[in-house]
Length: 276
Image (cartoon, rainbow, N blue to C red):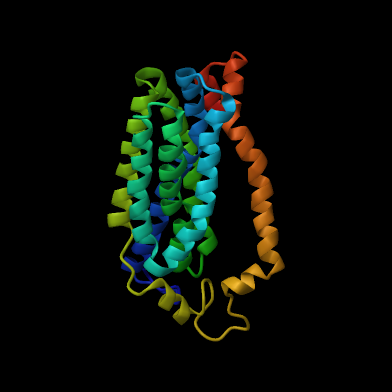
């Protein structure tokens, strides 16, 4: 990884490496968003297949969200220690394993393990946290632009993957659709981790020490942020509460809105094209 303390006048190979990381981040976030927003599609198919209560079926995705969120804390610490590249590779193996496991589910209960735990942990290891670390370490200037371009992958993933999953469910069934989803996830993430993300030239911790922390030039600073200082700051809790109260209503709607509209008489293709 290129040090954040590197000079502005990067040579062409460094520039190529930096913007290659941005492209890799966009691919990872596209796949992440596809996995994250696909439950609304599969939820309808699972209700029709197993004919279980809404609450029990939706509980799979409630566990998925909880495990994903809690895994973020662990993933952040592991990214500091081992670097994001290794975590993304692990996520590129775990998430497809969970998605493929869904296709073999004899009932709803087993999907609490495959989707709710395996896929969620894999997604956390290859998603927003490691991508943010990658871009923060790779860019001192134009960091906002880099994050913005990579974040565009989220919208692309939703636009492409969700209608594709509905198409596959309609034509080959939800089980084979999960197999195809696992293959897409593996084929996109593992090569990115192996070939598009360069091996770090120094450990992330030493890199940040030399650079004076993420986003700051080398040299002394008035305040070196630590986890303890962040936990004691008002800004940390305001941002955390904003994320929490934003996601609670959004996630409640995301799982059920497709099923509700389909039951109201709308076609699955139409619903997924507009609101999937």
